Image 1 (cartoon, rainbow, N blue to C red):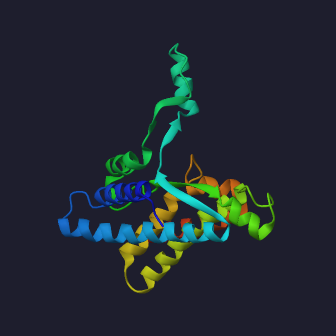
Image 2 (cartoon, one colour):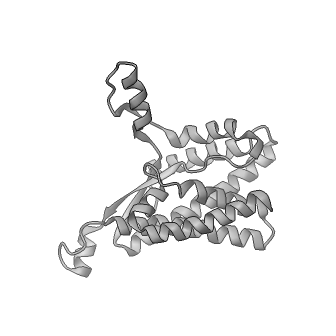
Length: 221
């Protein structure tokens, strides 16, 4: 089940991504894009929710925010004689801005815009885990568990991309690959970072499949 904050975050991400993809297009294309993006995000999050359930945990979906500045920015500020903090005064809502910014930069590539707008936090179900596994034996979620939950969403998008291509919905297949590609980037709180530090073998395997799909969708489809 989704709580109120999750529904708001998912709705914002869906609308912004859909608007960025269908910018300067007809209203009908915008509506079709909303439907496609809703399915892509919805199935991705459903796979994660199911995976977290079987790992005796629960996840909370939220809009991707950046709370700390990068090293290059710190170096630039230091060269100018200031001593900046690594923490932003307020988290930067990257999940809301990156799709629009990427559309302006990658405008010639049509629907190829930043689609990694949502992240998740994991909380273990201590009481239920203790009942099934013994007290304290499974009270913490490891990086491997978090990586498996994130990987479940990527696998779902790969399956949807293959299914969309086979039944002739090529744009739907392409959007699934784009969504998986941007989420597989191992930075900040994105799925790719969770998978990479959880299990590098799984990350390499999924990244290879996604890159092959990306190459095929951009150059062939």
